[in-house]
Length: 555
Image 1 (cartoon, helix red, strand yellow):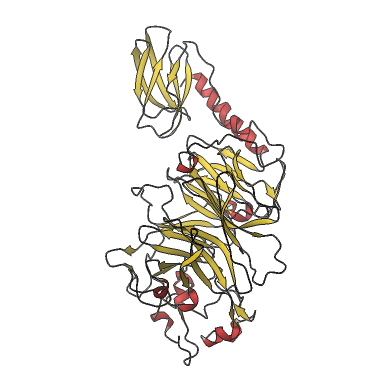
Image 2 (cartoon, rainbow, N blue to C red; image 1 turned 135 degrees about the vertical axis):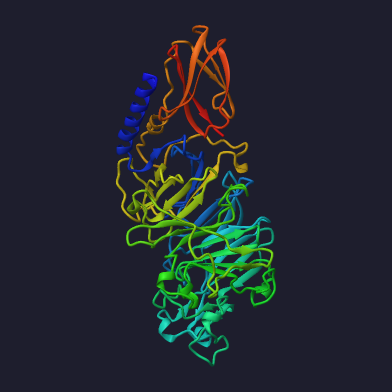
């Protein structure tokens, strides 16, 4: 190997390790030749702003919120450049309904942060919370707590020992049309209950024989009013399904969205023919009396989703399911992926011979290379990136990282807030200091960014190490003994190599680790080399005349 390359790789690795030791917040590490390039959206707790960062941790855009407003909890960038965000007042002292994850308002603002639409629901009977999902037609699905009195709960067989708060807040989903402010569809958990305690009640039945129904007496929260605590909402546009994460049941539920509101209140209608009854539930068969603790797969999960964001249908994980499995271990969390057992030809999800929803096993369970570095009892998110990497956020530590399928960490970022205020580089944060519900990475070429200015504009953290990312990125090589030049750079498929010294040159192309990928003698002062089969990343061209140049393969 060329001695210059050996020295460069050594110094580059040493520099990366040395600088990484100094970073405590913001960008911790970055391998751009392996990482997926994009912009990262965060909406950290205890402060009002939605922030878009590049992969160097620099702010490229901010949607400023009003003082006294905080996340409620999610935000999404639409293809037209508008932002959908959920937020609430930071003062909850007089709120009739309150629990962790509580929201209040859903707002649409444009790129310049001008409010275009506002919807609020927070009173003595109902409250928005946690998440929303935007449908292809622009309508928005929202999760709502609805208060039910103890008398109403008992009338449907709720065990009186499970009414510690004297009321219950089952969840419902509403679909709102921003053009009219109307609720155009809704689904209520309260209309799909079963119990096996009181034969005199109308919803009495055998729980194990009715997995489409929700057992009103399945409870893991000691009778808290916040019985379900649904924390994630997603929409499957291929099958017209709504996905709901119900962590207190340790399950993800799927609901048929092809129903009318009237059908969604019953058990017939829609493509499934089952109305608003559950057409799929997964993670804990014990919730419908079909399993034991040994069969449980989810443990207070977050961010359940159909895998489709920014992916082509040809992607091997497209259409499968994923979730962040918060409490799977005593001191670590995992990300899980499982097959979607839906058969669209018969409009049913597969079950085994005992009536348990499939699959029997998860497709994969992924954690940090040092498992204890990924542990969050709540919050948190997972995103499958187009380059097959995973973007994972540990919400309680505000720690986000990108992981390759080979379990290599190639990008790390710590949200630099403490209690909603920016911290100084070098400060060490503790659990819950910088709560970050999710991070979402949008591709560089996302339609919303077309024509927008996304220039770096400083950092969140105070006293940032402004050269840190430049020190991580391979520096410009200065070895030009034969005036070597490369074009274009970055390159997609063909790189043109030209030089001046000598008639013949031995050309080598090496990867960042010094492995020789191509070697041949070429004459004429110029050569066109096909690198279309090379993975995205950084490469070096060396010549026998002593020239060394770097190029970037971008596709």
